[in-house]
Length: 248
Image (tube, rainbow, N blue to C red):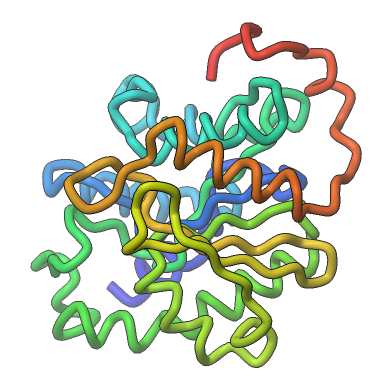
């Protein structure tokens, strides 16, 4: 099982690293039914960057509809609001995709607090797993951002991200915060480092505790438009034009 863990840690995200916008969650959600298939696929294809569509077609024979995956839906809406154009999510083709999807933890799981039996040979429980891998994975994230210099990194799922950010020698301090519009219990935080805007926000979901409606998306997008250091977009994405062009 240790070789499986190494293969799972190899993957950084769906998409290519030249994307201007990176969306980084906590861990990849899956079902127990497809958990072993996900691991087997990634062990057979130990890559740092994977094509979102190719992976899901191989795994499930189809790409799930975007509205079935709240993180995809909200990430796409945020991107549209920031850049005023469309993009495909997590594709390896630099001419059509400008949004990379990543996670801070390497093992897919059905629920954040669950610990599947399949992983018992690796770590005794979820807490031991997080303690063992979180520092390594967060260090890699910072290194990758420094190397590829995206415009913005959206860290969604503040509680788990705050754990490693508080221990980071480069990102522990210097954040500015504001309350989420119409959700004063929640906040957005941001800071600029080496011309990359880091943003911390709630999970990109819609439930009884967190909402990403039009007002919350516009607040986040407005913050990014205001604080980012823009860089040129590739010619292929420029040709895509308006919000009405193409698929997500």
